[in-house]
Image (cartoon, rainbow over the protein chains, first blue to last red):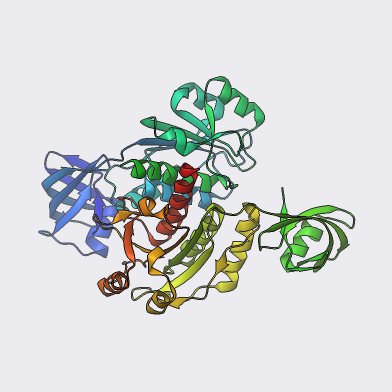
Length: 234
Length: 234
């Protein structure tokens, strides 16, 4: 099943733009009168009929609209970018496939690469969402400094991932909150100052198991860990 | 902490060979008399002292030997190679980091790429094991045809991952066996004949959740799902 992303929807008309239009009319050779499935990226699936198949802009008349099933939890991951951008992009793709609400590039003391390619990552989010049939696209936030981010969160449902034998396993506390924010540090980990600062405002440290994980692996592990906890409780 | 891999160990002498020797003597400039940590890849960590630091062969005198903690479960994943080798290699790296015992490239009817780069993947296994401080390196088996593989397994603890609303969630049955074998199909999924054949010999289908996953994502999801189930039971 192929799902397109309609960048514009008004009344009962939807538009596929740019790559989406090209993919529809040039690659898949859809023509006027053909039916297609698409999403608005905001939580709805649509069925429609093509009324204009241009390679830059496909116009669709909406036939049906359906609210998609949502994730039974709300997960945000604030994660340090890593040196190799492909590894960060890989994290984004897999997090989207497994299930996540928002991704916040977190600039920590030891973050070596402080910028990300926003447009490229947004395209990965769209394509991974379509691939895994998700109607609600996760949000990519602007990169934010560790200290600034701490001011924006509720410490009650925010956890800092840390390989610490005394910390509790994320899965053991995750099930009690309906919204979860995870902080994942850079290669070289958070500094002790950062950890103290987080603990000081009431954020708890959690472990993701007993193994040492790369930053981007920790991100994917969090997504699947939370997903498993909820599936097991069903 | 840096862990080397000693390709040869005899009595109280260990040898770092090839890349390991070069990394030790050239990159990290370790010298005779320096202490190093290493593993045999078979479940033990060692501490030793360098007695000969050649760029092709580092000789180490063993000071201490310690059995590493093992995974509390045994997980094998038989997974179809995918078109893009980087995606398969990514699965291997992440599976090793999270925890797995053996990886079997499974050649299914719809597998497009029927070969893998064995030496390259074995290097990824060594490097991901060292990175995540694993003393027991997972085993990469030879690619095997779907039908042949079915003859080699115990159907009681073998599961076929399938996005099927009636199938049970893997996590709900995984906790009852001490050894788990998961079959993961190619892009385009198993054929109905393959599924019937598996069901016919008593293999059960399982879901990995409600989302559609790429082949290589499904592989990583299985590793973390099983890991979470065991961590939650601790």
